[in-house]
Structures are given as C-alpha cells and as structure tokens.
Image 1 (cartoon, rainbow, N blue to C red):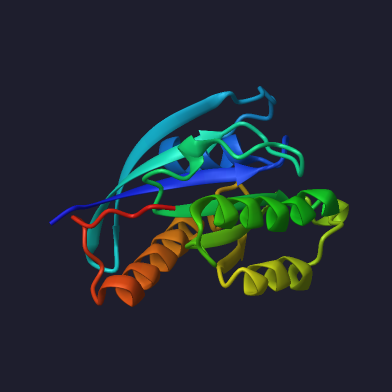
Image 2 (spheres, rainbow, N blue to C red):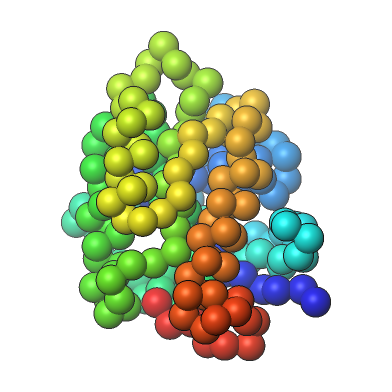
Length: 184
C-alpha cells in the first residue's frame, strides 16, 4: 500500500533548495539562479520496501524575520531544512525557522533533516560538517551534506526525511499510519 507524505523544503535564499528538489525529482541541475515563489513536485519512491508518494513543496527563501506561512505547517509530514556549506548565516537561520514552526504548530519538535548543500564546493566551505551535525542534533533531526550539481546524496536526503517522519509517526501512533491526520 502506498503511503502519501508531504515534505516542505525550507531555507534562506540562494542555498540551493530548488536545485536539490529538481535533482531529486527530475535528475537535472542548472547553474542559473531563478528565485522561487513556491512550487510543488510529485515523486514516488520505494524506501525500505515501502512505496511513498511524496509531494514536495519547494518554498521561497526564508530569513530570520520572515513570517512562517501556514501552508508550511498544515498537512506537512516532514521538513528538509537546507543551508549552504558556503554560508554560515544560512545555517543559523535554520534553528530560528525551526523554532518558529514548532511555536506555530504548538509542538516541541518536528520530523526533519538538515541538509548542507554545495558539498562539491569544498574549497569555498565556510561551515564544517560538525557545525551542521550539531544543529541537526539540537533539533533531533537527520543530517546529510549533498551536491545537487553531481547528485551526491540527494536521494538519501529525502530518504532520511522519510525515516524521520516514520519514526515520529510510530512514536505517536504506535505504527506509521496513513489515515491519521498530522497537524504541524
């Protein structure tokens, strides 16, 4: 039986959210930058022997002052928080956005994965692996670094998000069920 999961991709401007999503869904990468308003993508994957119909919401860039859109909470099962390994500020914003989401949803934690993009730009790295992992540990989420340009770890990032979603659903309901309502 197919499970439907809604995943929102959040992060500051220019960190590579759209590139991450397009590489995952379409296996494509563009060097050009076009600011995103918001777009939804569909992709079916099989993970751990289970088929998932994933609806992925590629969002506009957030910053520490951006209000959280209710669309980013209602019906969303999990979050992919994206920062660039070339931008320390983009990592700092993740904790702020995470806290705003928790406050808005009235919960203490949400299923998520922290994704450091642009791992192919090692010579421009300004955020080390330990710093990214520390944020993931602080929010009790998964962590991975990826390169949307060469596709390295891109699919794994979304699989980790599915793992976090299923882990939280099992903790809440005893089993990961499809027909339950998730309010975040």
